[in-house]
Amino acid sequence: MRSEEEARRAIGLYGDTVRRICMVHLKNYADTEDVFQNVFLKYVLHSAPFDSDEHEKAWIIRVTINACRDLLKSFFHSRTVPLDSLIEKPGQIPEDHREILEAVLALPAKYKDAVYLYYFEGYSASEIGSILKKNVNTVYTLLNRARQLLKNRLEEVPDIE
Image 1 (cartoon, helix red, strand yellow):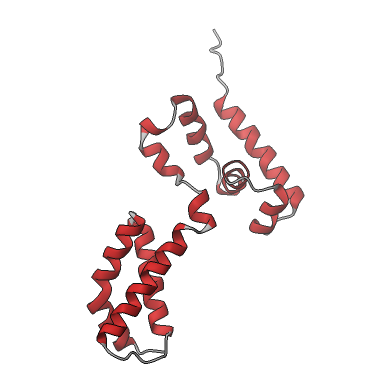
Image 2: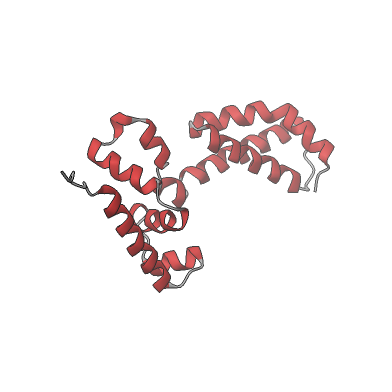
């Protein structure tokens, strides 16, 4: 394991290179920061000595490229779209879906998680139960209550005159 001083030196020398490589591959600042941290964590945990500074730089570049590729082909990255980004870009979703999406995002967290995993990620109730560490029947209850909340929110209440 490398010392904190060695890690700071490596970040100073190669940090900009790692970020540029990540931005080229990922085109996303948040993912770039995640990979940046992972690369330098691997560097700190890598105990084998490097032959030269060129060898060290090549190793960091190779680890960065591999980490970017791993992230891009990961299950999570390939199957998700940030919900907030859909709301911020009005031209991407039809207006009638926009109201539904806003209603889902307004749900309490315990319902939102279950709804998101069920409808947007395609998980079954039993899979959601294991992910959220809840009983399957609890997941069904959360989904039913969330549906009711969504129905109440989305129903047009006629004006009483």
